[in-house]
Image 1 (tube, helix red, strand yellow):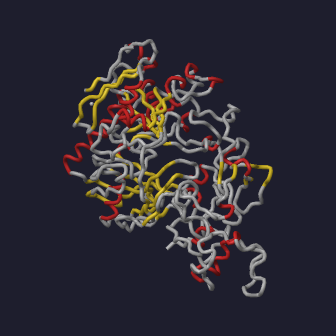
Image 2 (cartoon, one colour):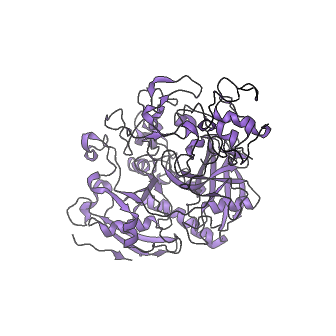
Length: 614
């Protein structure tokens, strides 16, 4: 084929007493400069050095589209996974392009989604990518894509299969997600999340997953409406964001907590972006510094699931602080488009999704209706392109990586509490709930200092036999079972660092690159399949049930009817239907997780005892 590129362009306190010094983890420092709304800061130095994945073409479930079925009637991520899944190594991308198309935005060595699409066009004979001029109306580049969809070696009208526009199309764009880690419980749909963001501003990070596909002209029009509004806003009012709105779930609904925010660049992520770049984090930091609202941040490293987040996360809004699985969701964009995307699950009952969209009038995708009425065609487009709980301005994206060169109409924060049950977390542990004691070490009568030979060693049992200590009457009677962190009630923190405000699920952040050491069985790596599963932290261990509760098909669900709890792959193939969809036998956990609790260093109770929150 003859082708060419046409240039037209938890974070939580570690568990129990003692030091957590570990040269392999990111350096936790005081913020530089010091921001009072940071619980902690990290000396970030992120590079794009790994790989990411590209899927070409739409995802269609094979029970509805048999021609999309793979081996053993499994869903595929693409029309043909043997052809259209592409792994892209950072080293290869850097060799092809020394800098990004948007070199004025990204720090050296970082790239955009548009760079990836251009690269795919360079390395494949079946994709032709044409970079156009910068479009001042929408603040990004125009481009066109052709895909030899039928594989006949030609780019022509025959490639417009299944209603797609695959010849010199201006309607190709991207969906995205980041890896969910090792647990096969991706919450998103295999279609991935539709982007309204400008592709030349959306950063590529290790383990990013992208889908490039043809959308309808209606999707292109809707997306460009959002982009044009933001360009116009910048021209009228410079870098001023109209409002930050919040739903505290207190019955008041959405309330405005900050208005007319004059945004300044804080350059907090100078490892990702050039100085003077704007992100959603800058909007919220500016709202905080204006005195109109309290917005607090913490940092999420690589999580216990091995999902590499590496970003600052909103932890506090006007005193309401994240706690375990309760926290803040975020939307950035235009208020009138925040509800564009919808969960199609409830519409699958009865006469089917399309018929139910038609029956609902203009409730879904009103911009596609004629006098408030859907046709079969418009309802199909509505379902296929907007039928996802996440998309547009409401995606899984962190504020310090969410570029906002053009000011959005609003940033929306919504308090969420349902995640505990959504993920079937049997260990709903929160400091102070009475399941395990939390000791007040401020009242310690014999605090240790650095003269102690075990200074900063968290597990007292490494040196002291806990059942043979204080037998000479030199201490009040010990309880029948004295766990290491009980020692802190008399002997203080033994050099443990101060906490940073968290009171639940410390293990979520302190497990990989910010690992805790010398914390007894809480630091011990074990196979998930060897861990007994219980319903609550204080229940007796049931040896007949092994592994995390959410890894098993035959267990009752805390939240019935939520299949994301059951093992499945990213293409939506469930273990209940495909026996070969299994968790790796090498999947590991530490002594605390959402499904089991260490009895000697219970999370978060031992954590907040020794790492006192100030």
